[in-house]
Length: 553
Image (cartoon, rainbow, N blue to C red):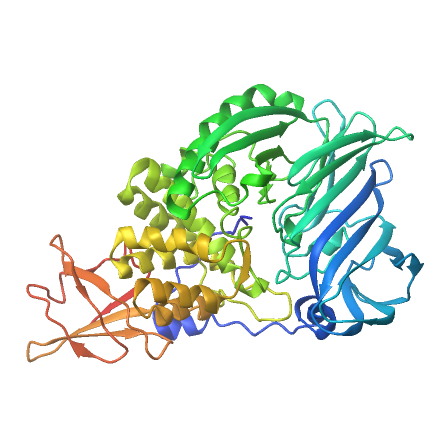
């Protein structure tokens, strides 16, 4: 997902002292936050294997009713577990082996007690029946819930978007990113004249006696909770053919409103195949061949719903027609198609276990935009695009948020995360190796949930370098490191980094104005550097490619 941030109104100093003023007090976690974000034994005692979500949508009443089957493997002996469902939705019954079992609720958590112990290693299941009026999003996709609106002909158009707030805002689930279900059947019943488009592949459509139709979609791959979606409207489906990808033919399917059919055929053909070509080159095969690739018209801007990417950018290039980098490159392609599809690799294929580590989703996906630019316009254009996008960085708080309380870190995870990856590429200083590292991420963590530590360990191992101090500085501190260069009276040139991380030592390029760059690797302590021809007056650091402050004395 991409969230829009207002630009800074004041130019913030990049020196350590001024940046320290930006430190914000840590948010206080509530009991509800902990119930949602913390992995207690009541959540880790079972591993989700399969869901069958059944939902009937009453559009006029804005009411949903249905059930979800939880099929799981016990990871330890237990008699009690937790699942999640927002408190405004009623749990009508929890059924186990044909019998109703007792449950209690606290905030948005539901605790089920079973009649006898479920033993470690046993595969078992229970079903939750629920109903109610779900929360209606006020400004999807930035907040979560249902969107109820109408198409151009006045017919109902309904969708869900729930990243951040959680899937339990509309369906009962184990709402934690660390446990992705292995496969899933999504059955959505909708009124006559409407269709549902959800994740995976459409298995069948069943006409029901009450005039409703049930659409059964099967997801053959692991999927994170917030990706599960319904999209209900008077959709028209057309095929984009197949893409000849690295794993063979990949089906391309598009579901759009009637008024968008003509322009969608042209617009999607112009954006999707080049995107797939670029991303398979940089990141490896599309991760969900079995489920195909879909774009679905949505009544909100967009969301990375796995194998059913929600699209609402009004069939124009840029971000709602604007180039957020101000370089011209961002106006040559549809931002939502490129960015949200990039999440198929980062966010959907590789998912952070805790949303505190959402930079793994958003930093890499924002960087994927630049890799698309590089594939179409070259490396210099990609570097320009990253540099131009840095204007949205606020340096307000750490990018990594507090763990265990369902809280993200700074929105800087998007542009600052992308800038960090660009600097890591320069530090590795081997483009072929860097590409293999990116592709290796998708292979090593294929369909897995990860932590920051796992990703950093992988990057260190594959690069043969200790990148941890650089990564920690940009992810765990709001302050931007400052390169300080001092020219002494006796003719020496000294350099150091002003940074929060004690062992911070990032290579950086400097030059005499207009000359050739040379690379130096300062540490936190002043050290002599050889910079022939460089003076206090003509020193230039490569701030085009390195997101740093510079202080010359």
